[in-house]
Image (tube, rainbow, N blue to C red; front, side, top):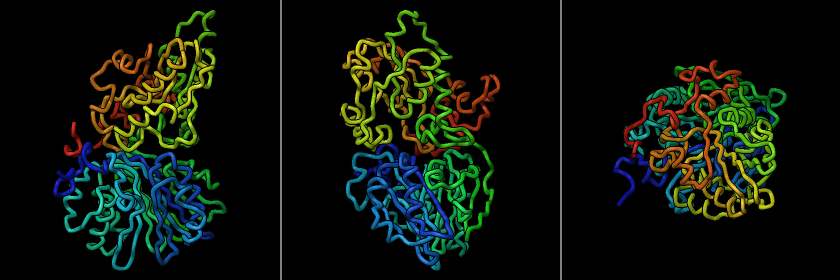
Length: 503
């Protein structure tokens, strides 16, 4: 039996190409150089946002050249490939998608789903790359019946929507603007045409970060999912792309169009998990936010340990996103910080963004792959384990079990993100209630399930305080904070098709 309906309806639990993505996009326009090496460096800067595959499209102002493949940027774009991609404007993409274990059933099908995707027009071609999730995917696809779809990705819907609008307008720019008005959900899009014009779009809520910078010597512009990509090519960060804004970069000139009303709802999970520690999002450095979260954990529930017993306790952070908070918690509590868990640098896949539940379970059970426990640091000690979040609980339980195997005396969990009770339909990989360990469980029950001695989550006010950097919690307007926290407070900023809700 097919996993899809006759019209290609998305079904989160069943389809091979699930709608949840957290990718990286880059666009660079330069009037002085071949762009491929700059794109390569910027894509390395957003590699952590997608490790399944990557792609690059460049224009020499007459034609688009595109290359994409399964694997990391450094594997796909060897020097020979880069030398063949000539052009001074280009876009890049690093892809992550949640999917069934048949996600890459064949390499041919896998590559079809990689970005950029190329659309052919009568007098122009374009390449488009996408990060996010269209919450009206099914409605859009139903209205594109004249197209023969090759995949079930949001990006192919966007590509075909632009082509259809172009047939009405005979203008790529206007077709893009019309398409923008019809798309709902969380997304960033970069688009490149034959003539080297680059467009960048951010959804009206600004769910995902997108920044713009200028190249050295004012030789061009870069748009990138994170400021880290801007920094890696020695460009200068200028500002965040506004929610609902469309940018047009042509011949070293930047034009801006505010096409959608701004209703800011940035995904707060970016600060806690997804974004690189050195990135700056909406004025807040990710590392600073994580440091404040560590302080907030101690402030909200300080441990009362007799001074003569302090030497029996150790703080251990889970790499990488738990380390800043662990350091801050140690400084606040006076408990020694020790490196007790080390990431295996040759195990590149992040368990949370692995392809499917079965593969995540397999990855978590292969205990020696992702993390290494330093037994001498934890043996006989009471361990306070600081981690960024608990989604399904697979990796957390494995870490607790392995600390006990290393003869830790006790394990006390401190989590820098509140319990995740609700699915995300805006592009983060927790699409159903039944996958979430916090759903229908009390904190005590979660603690028992994971096997820890105690469990603390930061509060929602504490989380917002850490992100906003306010000096006092009472100065934060938690209902109008410009953050999407639907996974923890059930307040979804935009409409979601019922067909996407399969609980």
